[in-house]
Image 1 (cartoon, rainbow, N blue to C red):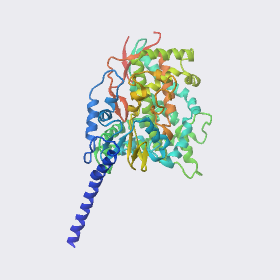
Image 2: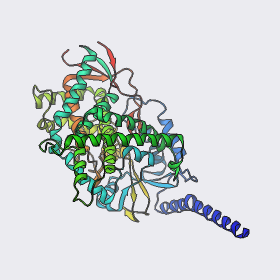
Image 3: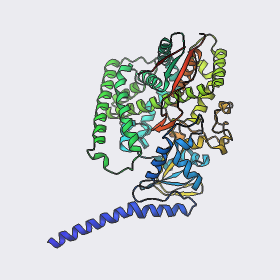
Image 4: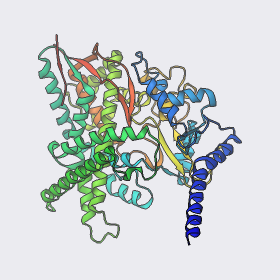
Length: 521
């Protein structure tokens, strides 16, 4: 009997060793050989950790100090791509632990992935801490459930509905700018705009997407800010299956934050249900939370939306809505401060289109061509999301390449936006004029501009983000001229999305009128 036990333990140990060898050594070597035969190489795979150590080392070194005032930010922000592209070409392998990713930056191949062959690809699974932060909503849902939720939520983001939100957005913007003016008196004032724009977008999201007051959403944003630090840390580590269940200090903090987050969101949902009482104004703007609650109350719907579903969608829109828009506003303001001649051009257009009005109407916004060009150039040079990943659901041909099922494809959006072969020799310069004939003609390839993704999974909130950004900038430009503060240090960095590492201090001077310092907290 004892012999059988020993034999059993030996066999189980042998099976475990074989499984580890298969997963962490033999399979990666087989994949390397498969792609090498197609001319795709990359830095060599290292047992278990892949290329993570080198990758994180390059990223840490690149972000260790500020850079010159230049928009050539690829070597700093995506340093591993910039470095390995010079060695292996634009299409190469990079290993995140035992998981292989193939970098794809050719616009023709990107078009296949997102449009003509999109049925063969899906979003990859985010690390657990990241998923907790961004919610199991539209960003991560797949298949039928994703389509169902998108149908429910999409009326919130129809242009006719968004136009009804303009007075609400304008109120928040004017309140912020009046505070700045008071801080500076009749002189100039230094504002750390990245913090102020985060507060602004938090206020706007709570009012427009959830039909509620800012104080109701403030707790959720505070909790997400804490979760974001944990999630960013997780991005820099090899994913170990099952590690999230271990009671480490980081995991315990994450569990506690997630529990508090759900509690705050359920309270917000319950309050909204009580206030609605079945008597919502059908002529007013449709908000995301109201649409989700109505879907959950439709008892005849076999695909009923649960409270948990609503909580996850709220997480997604609190996170994505805030950071995409606030980052876009921050980088556009920095760019206009660096290039004041475009402030002048945008201001002249505002006078021509809006006349004496300092708050544009919905019709005015559509006519602000120069401002649209400026925002598009900001999205090109400093896209909020610098890369995205898709996973092959089956063996598929991508251009001339054969991609095995399970392979992850890394699309470096920032690299695509900065490619001189597509955008010309001035690809790293701020030139909004390249968009004078529209987005499709700005580059040599119409799929070279992808700040919000492409195809069926294009960011559903992009129209709201663009409306908020253009309206905020329009009102700001009519009230202030602005320039970089002497303390500004140019240091784009990634913390999930693209941020100014040392903040964005900007000096504002009221128009028609020197100095105080203030921040928005």
